[in-house]
Length: 436
Image 1 (cartoon, helix red, strand yellow):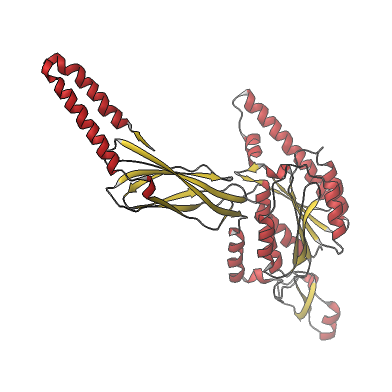
Image 2: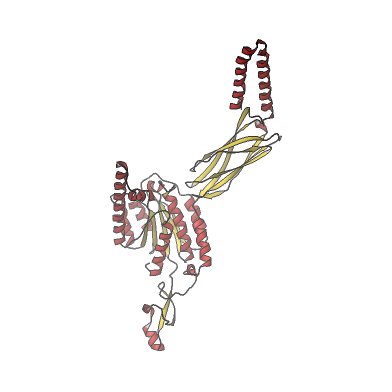
């Protein structure tokens, strides 16, 4: 479709001014207005002829197969013209389907071919689809504008963020401390699995001294222990409607999925077996604990397929079904969230019941915006109300966390930025103290 530009409107508007002023100077100057209009029409027609034709333009999109949620990525658009002509300015925009931050249109000079790069940042897992491209260009003189629409069907998968897992893998290979549990590493007083005896040296834990063996050898001997392995770890993710809310631009469920993926990698490297459970109204996804680093790829696929649910979480049914599937004592990591102590009553009751047989690590993803509202100095009545409500919610949250801790449940309540580190520290503490 070809349409006149603003420059073309100004050009013909100036012709009207010539038509009004020329006869006032001399009656015979009306021919100047005719000549001006003729020249304007010729220039407009020439600009339309030199402008690239829609039928000669082809579009191509180069996009990554998958991107990680919350990570910036980009795709490129290539426009090619069969019959190359004079360079003209072109502006391209894209229609995307999916949860991404708004993208801006890109401009460049178009002569035969043009390449444009569109950066984007996905905010939810799923698929980002490039549905169509819109291109708008003007002629070399800028008097006429043409536009075209190109239908596309390109898709980009949005998967959980595995950057933390890759970083942990690099640290694992370069730091000896990370190898505890993967191999038979010896650490005096660390873990509960007996490994060997050795002579006492200053600095060793006195509690590790074996007095009977020391009497037999007539010198102090200490027991060496190694980190226990082959535990069953169940990562249980709440996919209810509270977990679909955004925290720091990303849904809570995706923060939980990223933390679960990192914990799974660490657990597998420690020699444990890792399984997965996802629940809302009941358990809809369950994976039996398995060992081996290849399990990380399988868990990544499972987490990528988790859907955001609008249902309210039924802790009574979900935790009952989970308990029935766990035949042996396991480490159960529950990643969820709650709003107040009243709605969390059933959650506390049934988590306490699970903790009687299994070791439970409760992980709640705190909303950092509420903490900022509670700590901010109010400068209006509305700000004061927000501060009071936020502080009240934080107090109720601490009441629930305290009840869970009194029941013997390990609790992690942190912002999304700190949830990975706190969860790994809690898991390592459980392993080091032999609490399973």
